[in-house]
Image 1: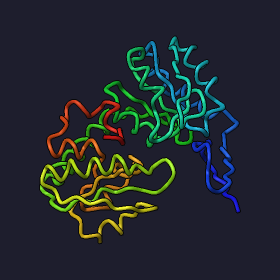
Image 2: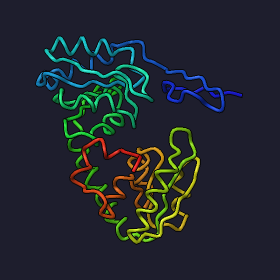
Image 3: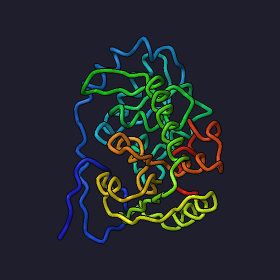
Image 4: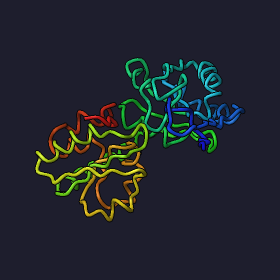
Length: 265
């Protein structure tokens, strides 16, 4: 009759099934404050930092801002842009308010996990730090994102050699992009690929592996191409990576920019 969703803020205004979102927020800011104190020397080297937090740490955003002010650092956040609902909030695929601060900040600090920091680091040339209050560590993601991008370029090269391509569309609310998928399929066909649209609910690697296609374009959640790729021996490209592969976009103009995670073409 209904769904109880744990761990996210509401990101769909309407749902065919009543859904109750329990955000599971942390109430004690002590882990964040302790982690910030351990990281003070690194953070004090900056004057303006764009700050984002996962929903679990949303209630501690004011504490983060105050602690950074003690270090002489101004913390900048942006107003929420759907599907985000709160000032400073980030999702693994939602960073638009922070990206709009690109001209104002020297770097970014994402409080929550390396997963959330990496999603931003792939879309900006500014340094991105991830602060994990549970692990009590601050990570500069510069080296990790460069390593990941080298790997992504290798998958783009594999895609160039592939002939049969599946353009993967999910029917999940918020991920159903049939119009963009049809447009991309035609672009791939003009480039000589035998491209077809694959419609799925959950995008499961096992189903892709046994589908007979040699490469895929992911039109669902962009993080599938990042986190699930290692489980698949065939390229699972983002739409912009696919355009790079067929010469319709340039690598140097797309990576480390907001265009990299763009799911419309």
